[in-house]
Figure 1: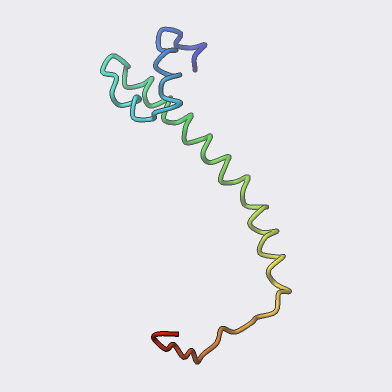
Figure 2: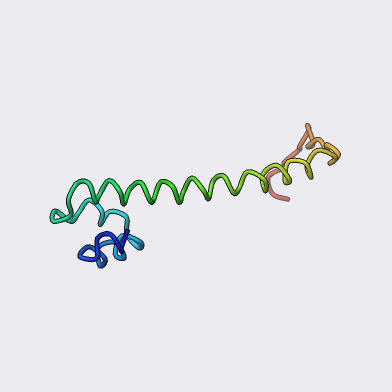
Amino acid sequence: LIALYPEFAADFMNSVDDQSNIYKNPAMPEDVRAQLIHVFVLALQKVFIATIPFAAVAFLFTVPLKHIPLRANTKVTIGE
């Protein structure tokens, strides 16, 4: 994206730390803003898709765990 629009390179780099800068810059054209948002969405999508195997493995590790019920009766006395 920086190669396509070098005049907005500083704005792109500022939006890495603070994504609200995408909307704060009135000089950025709407089509450039839409492309930048699309790039963010694609990056987030890849991150969430990459976590699916880790979540599946974590779930498989929990399947053989024995269920230990919590105590049903708890007696609390004040002053002890």
